[in-house]
Length: 212
Image (tube, rainbow, N blue to C red; front, side, top):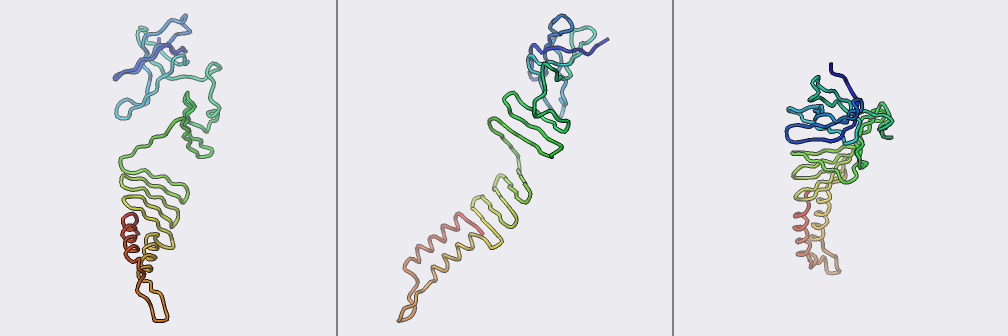
C-alpha cells in the first residue's frame, strides 16, 4: 500500500507539460525518488503554479511500484519555521525569499502587498482604487481623482472641478473680464486695454489644455 512520507526536495523539473520534483527520502536511507508530480490547485481552465524549493521539506507518496508519485505540499517544522508575519490563525499569505509579502489579515481586514522592487497592475478596461471618500479611476483615455465634490481629470485636457465651480470657467471669466475692461478718466472711459490680443491668445491657449 502507498504510504505518506516526508522528504527533502533535491531537484525541481518544469516544462510546458509538467511540474515535478525529486525528493531525498529520509525514511528510505536518503535515496532519491523518481520525478514526482507536484499537486496544483488548478491546471485546466484556471491554472496555478507552486513548486517547492530545493532543500524544502515536503509530504509525498510513491505509487506501489515506486516509479512515480505525488508531492502534496511543504510543512513547517523546527527545520523550517513559520515567518513572523504568518504566525496567526487570522493571517493567510505568502512571504517570498527576497522579503516581498502578500497577505490578508482577517482580524484587521487588511490586505497587504509589500514588494521589494515594483508592483505592476494591468487591466484591459479600468482600474479603480477607493479609500473612504477618495477614488482614483484609470482608463485607457483618462485618469480621474475624486474626493467629495472635488474632481481632477487628466485626459487630452485637464479638468478641475470643485463645489465652487470649474477652474477652467474661473480662469476663462477672468480673461474675458480683462478683455472687456475699461478705465475711467476725466474725459470718460478709455478703450479696452492695449493687450486685448494677448488676453485673447491666452483664452485660446487655456482652451487647448483645460476644459470645464
